[in-house]
Length: 175
Image 1 (cartoon, rainbow, N blue to C red):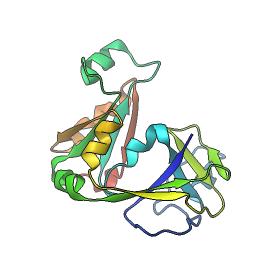
Image 2: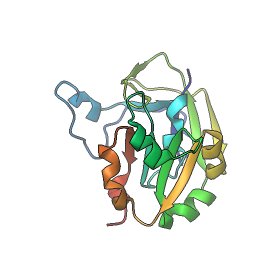
Image 3: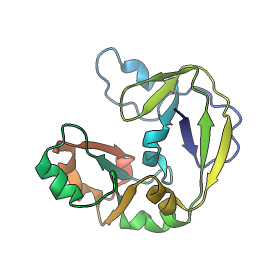
Image 4: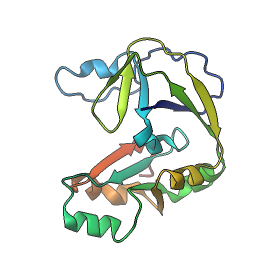
């Protein structure tokens, strides 16, 4: 399995552990996840980060416990395994911006068993870096259907459905 970190910076020689910018409420015993860490995502879930860093997005995918009615309503007869919702105001940036995918060695990382997320408590030197210039194409290659909406707030109910839903940078969504 491969691990990646995504950035808009093309020349990171070493990833140093750092605390999250905005601490999240964590379950008891997991408060350390707000502390100094290097974050990575596994290859299977890298599509969550094939966006400009500050782009608000919601990604959904079915799980073994997804109800048929949720699958039919949200996925219909589509073949995509993941749907990514973004706001129309971000579409131009998604289509034109480059990002950099850093491949990281696995040896110091711990699996959080949460949507492909891994963390390292020590500094990490990347194995390689790739510039990704056509993000919609990269998303399609990962089996992701990109859906454009006016406002992500209209999708509030998605977090109560029986599939997995990940919201990223939602603080940047239109009010």
